[in-house]
Length: 278
View (tube, one colour):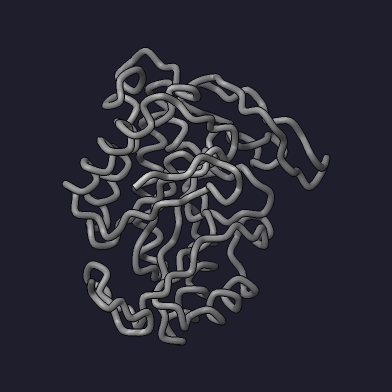
């Protein structure tokens, strides 16, 4: 077995990492008005001794904001805010990927701006509640089932946001397809009950995720694109289903063909979810 030395340099695509430590993404809700700020730049630069930092979940559009005070990466002001973070991390010798997270049905009208909408593969309500600053804990709403226009718009939002991330100085982008957010909502036959080409079979349920990844790869390059998955995860009302192994085997094989930078797997068994088998 190869001697795996944690503090030795490593290669990740075209990137040279100074060690094999990766700081996991952690939602912090410190972005007032959804704009990254100096406090966030300080936080990430303090952790730049890790080989790679993955940021907190960041919305690719107003529709994807979901939680109170999470950052976005779709406006000029947000890009300028993120430049503070990337500059500080790079100055400290670190590397940093932006995690793009569209929350889909895990949202509330009080947490998104006027004109934005809560969308999901299907109009299936998640059980549970979420925090809103103005009215504290509130039930999840019934989301709007995405029509063809919503699907196309959301794809273009992902591609544009990935491009903005690179312009703002990030070394790459991690697409959040885990923890019950929009992309995982497409993968599960419980949250996705569509009867068109995006629902039903494993291939159809994986289609939107692969369209997002393919488009981001075409926009910023495969060496700058990564994906996060949580097979067997139950966060945000994602119960297990019969075809989990087959779904994630097919999806990972398709992602492997694209040659992306990395696949980030989340194991929720410590929180009571089923263990992820080898």
